[in-house]
Image 1: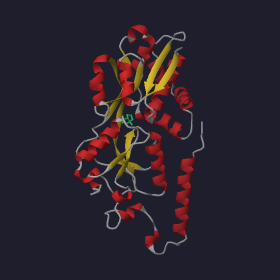
Image 2: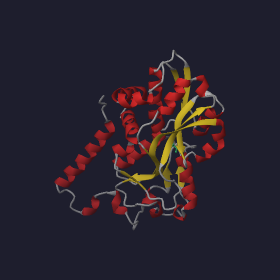
Image 3: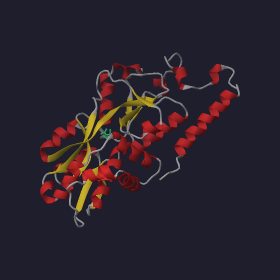
Length: 311
Ligand code: PBE
């Protein structure tokens, strides 16, 4: 299904305007061009000052926010920086607005994520390794699920896909599709993979199951896809958005049945240590995830160490 994409239109329109300007040769004095890269090196205004020494973050409780706070502690050059929490949606909006104006911005980013398909972005190098290496996203269920709901257990155990698959679903949602519809469409278009997940899983008759997740773009996509497949098997599925720590707790104390949103080993490492003895691990559902500080490609810096202290 093709949804109209206002954001992309905005960028294309912005781009063609500047091409027109360049083509007319109206830009005689080279310096009227307010390209953010003019500020590289920080002679007059530096990026860091323009950004108000602020990292645009997401929900408090996200592992990537904690890692950003750790990076401020660990990198001397981030002295005096702020990690501004908000929501994943607000972060994406701020990123889009900065890119429209070609202004500098540093966000707490992660992959897979539609923003890499939508914009030219890069991770800043992290020589101190604060954001960890490649991660897996894992599936966790409550104790007893295998006995109570063997079919759902088996489906959740066999659920496995790639970053590209998840990014397809996320991109549709970011372009305005309803998450349930985007999930249904992906499931319809990927019958072969979905039938592997359902291999040997019998249908049920309206049994109730509850999955928990956090409203991060990745988890909205994956949780809706799993919901769709469970419904197709005859389950009555509730998906409940929670804060990160509460999501882990709900599985550990058996209030919810499962989640497909555990980022390991680092991003949710603390929560995993806290709850691992009280839940059942079904292993990775996706390999090749990553978190870090992300900036637009047009910014002329490559490393966290290129940012400048506030004081
Ligand atoms: N995220 C997306 C989460 C995990 C999934 C990277 C925003 C986090 O930082 O906890």
